[in-house]
Image (cartoon, rainbow, N blue to C red; front, side, top):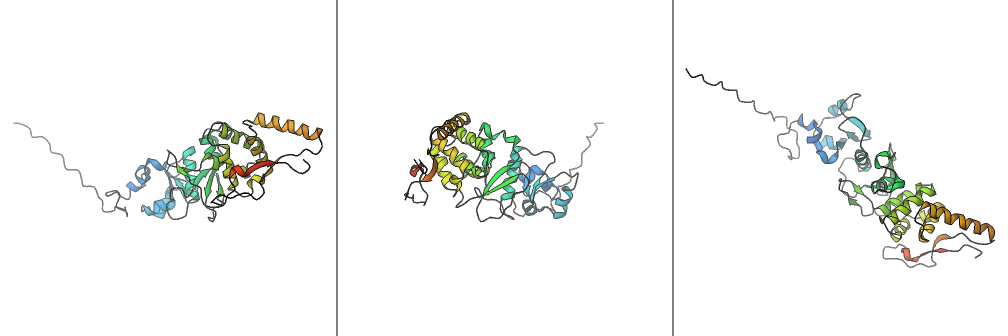
Length: 296
């Protein structure tokens, strides 16, 4: 007799009675599936998520707390910011986490609402004096002036003096300022004149920004050009200095001249008298010049 093949029982139907997808974008995903980092946010967020995002996806607070326990599969990176894996964060994850922390509470960050700035932007642009992106101790972010967000952990917060500048979305999905704006945000807190000179010279020499563009960004921050270390760096750039060595040699020559000839001035950056204003109310870079001090 011909043996009949054994029939296999049909696989049980998937239980979708506990589906928790309020927006209906992922039909059939169960509450267990929602805890999968890849299904949760996809690879584009690099496993960095806010607590509000988890709650919107239906993850209970108890589950979040359990997975954040010591030895658990998740880790708390910053207030309200969670990494859905353990281990050391990558430089991209640190930047994404900084933007998420500085964003508004309880809702998704809109494009350009929070921007990377400072050393993080300069390092990603490849400026040697900024260091390697993976070695940065801090991540600088720019937020609107009226927002109240404090420095926390590796995040250093800068506030826009006026309207937020027009940022751009990078290829990795993060929003950033331009190199010139990053230098302007960094200048007041970068007290080391040598490093600031190197960063500015590298940015101009490598054509990441023009001198006039950098000057306009500094003018947009009231009082920045009045800082001695910033004024000296900008004076050197206006004279054609494009390296730290050139700048230090120029200062050495001028220093000797000051000692040998009484009354010689040290130039200072100041606006021309009664400068014209642009439609935006700012003094254009062309109206700025290095003026002699008293006694010249």
